[in-house]
Image (cartoon, rainbow, N blue to C red; front, side):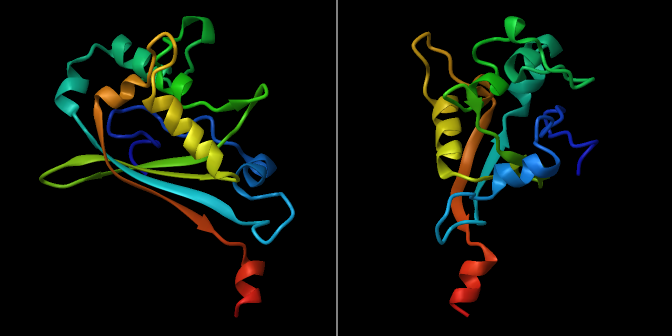
Length: 170
């Protein structure tokens, strides 16, 4: 953990993570079938273009993220930019937000630094739709402007089987 769950661009990450039993509902497959109790995991490595990011004024950075930098308060929906990270990465299906449990972990060495994104959810479509909304512009041209300051290096998705399925093959 880096500076109270902050990433290397100095914003708190995972503020909207579900807690308690909502976390279980978010990350575990509930539907009947052999995958019940399993989870979907995505791991992505992003390097940061810190020179460009640091050149932005704090209020511009907050517009890109959709939260205040120092006190971690979400900007009201009416005041958010349509390209804000927390707008573009949010997945809503039939009026219900599809949550993901996420943890960013900073990394760095002499050559590069950035974020390892780790996200768990009950359906791979949550990950796919979130990435699609981030990358592809909507009808007004809005995409996730955080992508202007990071480079996606790697990414992969996994299915983590439930213990019951593993026991069947033991």
